[in-house]
Amino acid sequence: MIRASIRYFALVMAMLAAVTVKAVWEGGKWVLRSVRDSLRPPVGAGADIEGAFDTIAAKAEAATAAVPVPAAESPVAAKPVPAPIPLDPILARGRIAEKFAHDMMTIDDEPSTEGLDEAAAAWLNSLNAAELLKLDQHGAHRIGSHMAGLRLIEGLPLTPTMTEYRSALCAAAQVTPEQRASVKEHEETLRRVIDELLEEDPMRYAPAM
Image (spheres, rainbow, N blue to C red):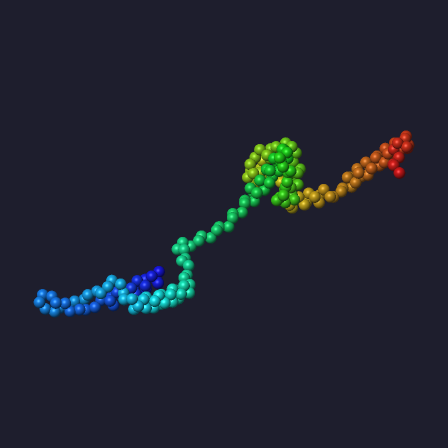
């Protein structure tokens, strides 16, 4: 682009150089007039001028190409991407419990309590068929509300908290004297029955060697 402009300018200058002033007899007297000898620049001189301007144009283009042009910045600033909103914990627990009940009532998928704490998982596994059916009839948010103790579903047992669950486990691990006496009595009864069977037919009930 620059080279073409300079070349055009050189040609114009050469054409202007070709214009001469001559004396012309006009109206009975001598008058100075500008006369163009030719529309083309003189051979040799015009070529030298054009070559010189070609050299200047080439240097100008090289200098222009060496200067980095900053990228145009967008007038509209990019909006930051908002962080994803975390799922409501009540709804999240309700969805897991709802799917668990559905999978227990069908053969679509293997029931899973992944994502729930130990207390909620134990509560789900303790429900009978009627309770699972009742659970499956409610939406995830209502189930989650029941598990959180906010809106209870009639006919369903309460979901224990982790503290209540650990207390129940400790209570189940405790053995009262009455329970120990009952277990001991059952063991003695079972042993007496085995002894009587061995006396009646020792070959049949004898342990295999």
